Length: 406
Image (tube, rainbow, N blue to C red; front, side, top):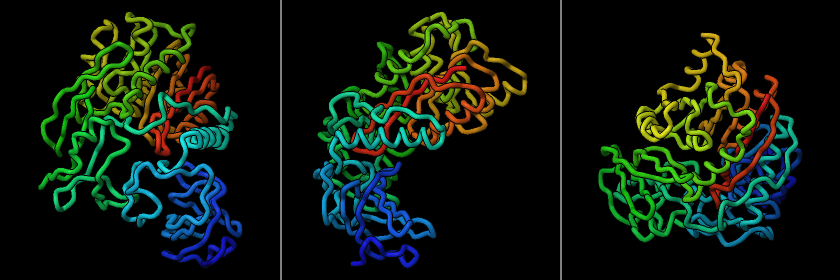
C-alpha cells in the first residue's frame, strides 16, 4: 500500500492509498494532506488512519472513499446504520447518515468548527467555535419525513451516496419509531418511482409519485399550520418548534415596527412569519414564496393576523421589482429562510439596498450563510447574533440563525 507521502499527481482513479485524517470539511469529508495536496475522504474522520480508494483526482486535490479502517479515531463509534458502515462497498452504502459513525459530542464539535471556519473564511467574522447545540436528546428516530426511491423490483430505498443506485435496507435509523414500525420501506411498489413516508404526529401517511396531494396539519409555537403532504416542513420532529422559538427570541423588539413593510422571504406556509406575528398579531407582514400551493396554505395559516398576506413570486424577482420601483423597507424586519444554495448576491444586494432595520436569516448551509452575511456586511450591516442548531443528528447538516442590523 502506498503511504501518505504518495504524490497525488500519480494518483489515478480506483487507486488505493493509506491516509491519516487530520481534519474535517463541510459536506462530511475527512481531510488528509499529502505532499502539499488535499484528499477529501468520505467515511473518515480526524484521528482515523484508513485505506481509501480514489474516485476523483485533480491537480490540487483528490476525493476518495474510506474502504478499510486501519486505526480508528477515538471519536469513532459503531455506525448507527450498519448498511452504511466502512466495511460495506462504497457503492452499496445508503446515503443520508454520513455522521452516523461519529460520537454525538464530536458531531456537535465538528459542526461548530465548520460554522466558525465558514464565517471566518467567507465573511471575515470571528464567532465562537461551540455554537451548534442539540435540540433534544442526540439519538436516532428524529426524522418525520423519509423520501425513498423505488428500484426495478419495486422495493423502495435510499440512493447510495453520489449515485442513483437504490439500496434496499431493513431499517431507517434516522426515521421515527412509527415510520420504522410501519415497515413501508420493506414493501413492494411496482411501477412507482418514488415514495414519501410521513409521520404526521403519530399517524403514518404514504405519498406515491404524483398522486393527488392531501392536506396535513402540523403545530409550532401553539399555532396550527396546514400544508400539502408533498410540501416542505422541517423533518426533525422538534425542528419547527425550535426555529419558531429561535426567530421569535432573536427579533430585536426595539427594532420591530408593526407598521413597517415587514417581510418573510422564502416564506413557505408561514411558519416564521407567524413567529413575528405572535409578538404582535396586528403587525404588517408579507410572506413571499414561489410555490403556488404553499402560498395558498400560507394565506390560510396567516389569516389570524389581519395585516398579513402571502404573495406568489420568486424572491429575486420580487425584490428586483421593489428596487426598480425605488421601494424602501426602512424600519422593516425581514425574515428569510432560503434554500441550501443560500439567497445569493442579487437577493442580498437588492434587499440591503432597501435598508430594512433588521434581517433574521435562517440557513441550512454554513458556507452559503457566510457568503450572504458578507454581502450584507458590504452594504453596512453588522452581525449581531448567531446561533447553531443540530436539526439533523448523524448527518453533516445543521441549521444556523443570525441577526443582521444596520
